[in-house]
Image (cartoon, rainbow, N blue to C red; front, side, top):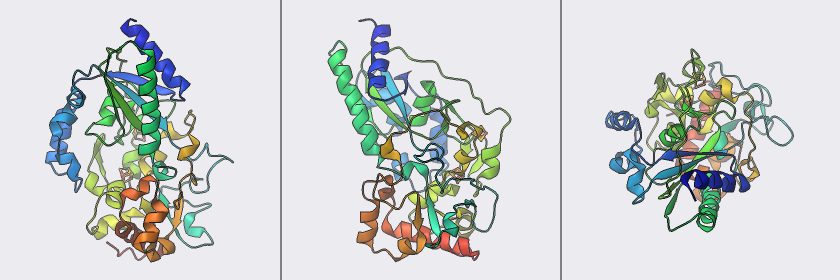
Length: 349
Ligand code: SF4
Ligand code: SF4
C-alpha cells in the first residue's frame, strides 16, 4: 500500500469511527518551539510546573516515539451552545461580554438571575464527560483499526493532553485550523470549540498543508478578554487568564485579577464566544460532551452550594468530568470570588 493509500485509508477509518476532523502533520520539530521556550522562560506559564519539564520532547513530537514519521491530529468538537438538544442552552443564550461588576455575565436565562441563586459559569469543554477519557478511547479505537487494516509492522502512540505535546502547534501544522489572535486553533467552518488529540505513528502518512490565518483585522478577543490576558495578538500571559486562575493557580488570586473573573467558576470561554468563527460552527458534537452527561454541576453551578461543599461531596460532583482538575479548595475559592463579583464588592482573592 502506498503512503497516499495508507493516508486515505486512515481518514476513512477515522470517519467510520465518527471522527470528522482529521489531518496529518509531519513528526518534526514544531515551528514555534523557540517562542514557546521563551514564553515559559519569561514565567508566563505561571504555576503550571509541568510546562517547565520535558521541553526537548515538547519541541519535537518524534522524541515521544522512536521512528515516528507522522502525527494523526484529531479535532473532536464540544458544545458551542447553539447545537444543544432543544436549541440554545440558557447558560450561553445572548451572552453579554460588556464589562460590568460581574464581568461576562449572561443577561438572559442568566445564572445570576436563576431562582435557585447565583450560579458560576463552567467553560464548555468541561460540561460533559472528561474528554481525556472519551477522546482517548476514540483514538485508541482508531489506532487499533489502523493496526488491523494497514500493512505493518508499525508503532502508534495515543496522546490526549497528557504527554508533553504542543497540541495546538501540531494541529496548525496539520492544517486543522490556524492559531488565532486568541491563541486557539480555529477552523473556518467548525470554529474553535473542540478538543485535540493525536496518534503518533511510524507509518509514512502524507502530511496535509497548513491553512491561512483568517483573523484579518478583527481584534474582538483582545478587546473582550476581561483580565487583559491577551497582551497582544497571538500572545497570552497565562498568569492573567481566567482559565489558568480558576483551574491551575493554587495560591491566592490578586484582587485586580479576581475582580475581572466575573462569575466564572471553572475556565473561561469569553475569547471564543466573541470570535466570529464560533457564531455558527458546522460540526457534530458527541453527546458525551453535553451538559448532564457527567455528574457535575454543568453548565453553571449554584455558587452557594459549591461554597458549602465539603471536600468529599465536591469531589463526587466533579468525578468523571474535566472539573476534577481543580481541587475542592480551589472551587470554593472561585465560588467565593464569583459571589463577591456578582454582589459588586469584588474584594475576594
Ligand atoms: S480564556 Fe478568558 S481570560 Fe483567558 S484569554 Fe480568553 S478571554 Fe481572556
Ligand atoms: S475574535 Fe477575531 S481576532 Fe480573535 S481569534 Fe477570532 S477572528 Fe481572530
